[in-house]
Image (cartoon, rainbow, N blue to C red; front, side, top):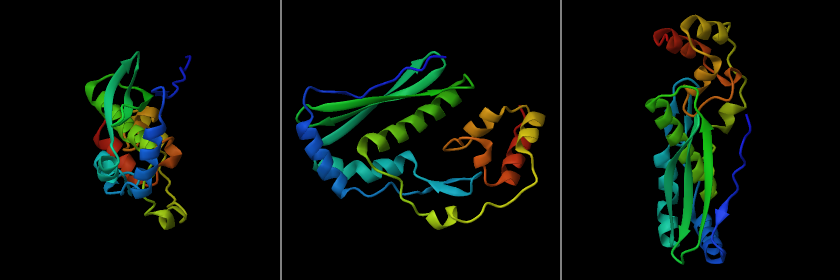
Length: 188
């Protein structure tokens, strides 16, 4: 499968936008991690936290944004446009593959794309409120998630995509017991 590279698009000049974004970023803090991922037993920044982090600094500096869903082959995504009151703008597209082709999977992928695209274009991180937790060794478990997934009709990719935010691989799953219980109660 050939992957398309999407470059950033922009107005002819972004001088005023860049100045305003610089000022807004000096006022913004990271997006607060308020939402909880039940499988990883961790917190993450949801869309509301990202919007809360940028709302006032954007408004105070003449910045706004719009996001538009995009559908292409077996991918969904979003185009995020960052605008300045001068008329200057930049935009970027983020596309994500969909394993399951249904409205719920599309909605979840679009929400994920919206959150990460907005965080990226605004230049804000998630607050690292669990840095100490990340340095602790992971709890060992004897559960074979691949076997449980297979037994329950799930592919490993579907298991990873069931997390919010999605796991990169099953090796990233910290609470294998909770994951196995979820899979067993949601057999496909």
